Length: 398
Ligand code: PMP
Image (tube, rainbow, N blue to C red; front, side):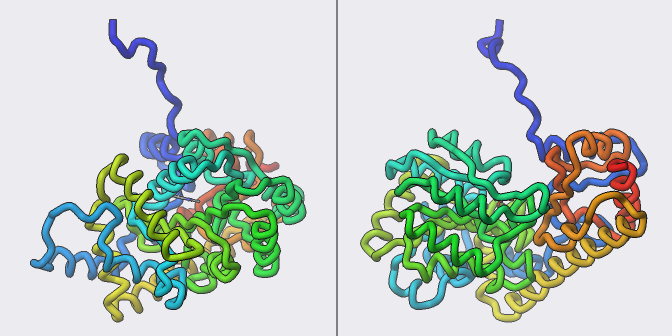
């Protein structure tokens, strides 16, 4: 009798489980729109040329060794990644505690533990949100609740519902916001709406946590996609950021990201950093260095940084082109419903509005893999499969 006899089989991850099913599917015509990873026009993963160049330089750098990195990552790597979000004055003030972490998920994990440590009891997530969010907070023994975000009839942001939700939150509670390119809906507040959100968070003395997984990926411009972070910084509030470089550097498997905590003073930032280091030390001791070295090389080599910025625009434009192509193909068929949301939404995903049953048909009958909530990754579309996807959506909704 095994000591594990009482351990039952866990369900497959809702997203990564679909990837495995897609790989195992023998159908000739199949499309994977489940996972949020960039694909080329040929449907292949893409190593950004700037990243490939930087990696060569890193590997050939004989001054690099394989010693442990500091618990919070190399100090000289911090400023270039802070500069993607904050201006020079605030960085110089020392009010930002920065810690290298295991991509966006690892950053959120440490922040969740920190919130618990500082006595926060509740985290509010948008409804819907990335499926891992509530799990991460619950694992840190935080209560997790939702505020309205998606308006099904409008197929857009339920701004009034969101503001009413914020009014219900209590001082000292944490509100999770997607900094840009909301996953899964692809719907972000407008600049004017962001200003109202920031003001409401400040008035209610909430603790904002900005999940920054797609900066530069939505519009192709870092500054434009960094707008919400800039507003929170200008507001003078203290807040957390989980910064991922999985999507915008295409470094998914390198697990590279950073935690930033904007504090009211340098003393507060020093104390926060010291405690965050304890969380990291106990969880995994110190972070991996390869991805961090690549990001640093790209950001500190002017020619590579210029290349990277162009690659960001290229990737986001390809996705926008696919939005236009998919909408055009669906509308050409006279498919019931409105389809403007396909081009209105931004970032990696489209929240199609397909029902659970319709999604089931897409997967079972047409071998088009997408999440149960109707989300499709636009990066998985290309000129070779967009017509087939449009045709299948047409059949599924009729
Ligand atoms: N936050 C959001 C909203 C995401 O969509 C993702 C990736 N799907 C992440 C965080 C975490 O990504 P990673 O851990 O790969 O950086």
